[in-house]
Amino acid sequence: ITVGSLTTTGALVNIDSTSGGILDGGDANTDVLAAVALLMINAQSGVGTSANGLEIQVANIDVDNGNGTQTSTGGIFLTEEDAGGALIIDRAVISNPSDSDIADISIATTNGDLTVSGVVTTSGEGTITLAANDSNNSADDDLIVAAQITAEFGKVTLTSDNNDVLFNAGGNVTTSEGEIEVAATDSGGLITMAAGTTLNAGDGIIDLDADSNITLSEL
Image 1: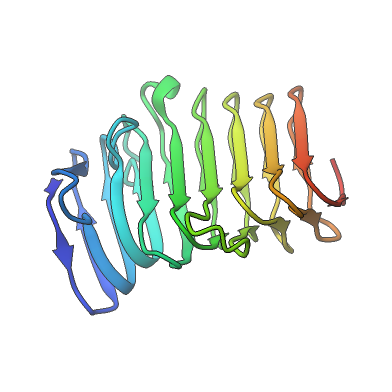
Image 2: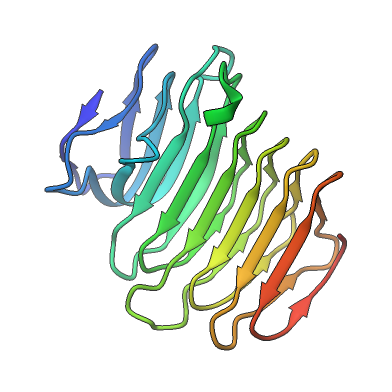
């Protein structure tokens, strides 16, 4: 399914490809413009590409590349474009990748909070990159992790461009040996782990970088 521009004021946008992928039809328009909606995507061979992800303006996303039990190819590449628009990840999973070298997940906001409220999972060499960006330099856009993030051998990169990275209750990160990198390096940036949260990189590296305080729970 090649998406040009989908627009609605409704509460749900559902895009479902049983055996294919979801592709960006061009950058002239936002691919999905539905500011209050849940965007649900089920695909088999990728959601966007690393060279051309989907541009969206939605409230929540629920994305499964692999449709649960089928073998999948490709990754998940999404950018929230709404100025001042927060994005909530209800789920972002890559199921049973046939080529784990490209089973990457990359989700970012342009200018708003990014909240992980449901699982984010890949496997093999697949990487996970989540970023709360701050294009207007308001210094109030956080990356908030409140659910499990899981990779195997790929790197997990969690970044707040101009504010804090917060690990709330349930916000754990686990890899088998992939590096976990957390960055909140702009002026005043904090990394805060709530009591009971864990970062577990197995045999891998954990790298935490902040401009201000780092509050630890369990590494």
